[in-house]
Image 1 (tube, rainbow, N blue to C red):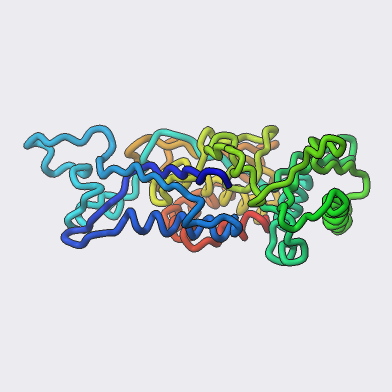
Image 2 (image 1 turned 90 degrees about the vertical axis):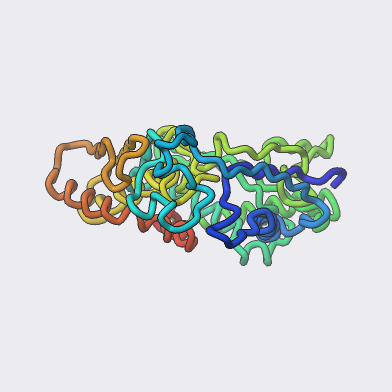
Length: 335
């Protein structure tokens, strides 16, 4: 580790509530270090992280300081003097004009890739294979009943003493993946691991931390995984990246998860494969989307579908609690 990893934390925060000071900088720094300790434990969070906080207490566009705006909901949004200054407590509203997308059920391929990644990154596997890094990526497609997988699995250098060890570890990973394929009743498959490796040149996916972050990989949210842990380009996808968005009224997170939730309920109750689209208007009531579209192959049971949608939209505001509790990860893995 020649230079520390630069961590940029950008966004708006509340540094106080009424007369109570909120140690926002300290909290954000501690949470960042906690995240790295859990995900990449070989990083020394005190020596290897250069944390930059770019924080603001400014409201969204539209806040003014004219006399007429003294009662504006945005006036003290990030500098509240009381709960009365938090408009989302009075009426949950959409923060943006955007779209949330979900679908159900997951395909056999999607479920397979989720299972493989979940098992490879599980605590049990890491105890069994301490050389296996966390920055694992899988690309898969299905054709004529066959499954074709390409997987990148980093190895951690301190646990790999020789080329022989490295190649042996690849085969150990292959064995673990084959177990998942067998349990999923996948018999016709092609499995490729670390296709960029060049054994003659000793060019390997060998890392110090188990992640490409050490080599300057920016790690910005762009093509990053959707809320269900998958990037499925043949499926409808939201225009939003959900990470870093607030779990209270940010459509890029709340409607995205809600759409998957509704799609899952429709499929489980009615056994109808479907796609759900929720469109918002900035400022509109969060529980009343501007557009709700449920796409199904045949116009089947429309009354029952509408009932499921309406009932679930009433509880949209509860999504925040589920996000903060960490229960959504288990929900998507077991869909």
